[in-house]
Image (cartoon, rainbow, N blue to C red):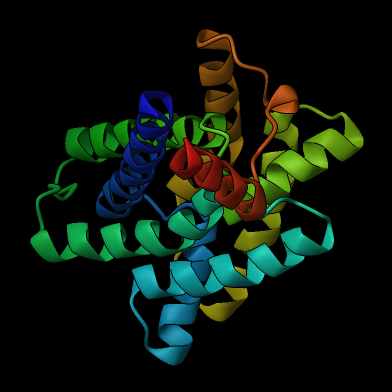
Length: 217
């Protein structure tokens, strides 16, 4: 049971890191990450917050993932709900500084990518179900055998293109994120000696069965 508790601590901590990284990149004023260009485009078109847009896009991507038979786990649902909520919370609390100098911009942006990538590694490797976007990344990695970084780059270029036409902000940081984030996540998998292709994510059904077994003991 202790192992399961630690697994969820790792999962939720990873989601917090992701939200923190997203807001750090936003505050760097160098350009939003590709998925957040899409989220901001939705924000401009229908007047919702960045976090709410994150949740809506996540739900849509979940449906696509289910079509490709990506397991729906508790981690998937927690990702969709918590990352968006934490994004809006960090923005509301205003605890992350703004990039009002070149040095601050660079530090916020680089730090944001690293923190976001570490968070992505943490919740993917927990095996409780990928986040919706990373679920697609894992599915296509397993289907094609292509490197994780290349698959992520392709998905983010697609999100970026749609977001741009919806009015999302694109900057030099957007290109930098697209070109580096997937490879940084891949670096963390190698650093901690994990193989994304070997991770088996539990479905909600299997987690319910496991919980019943714990209760029955």
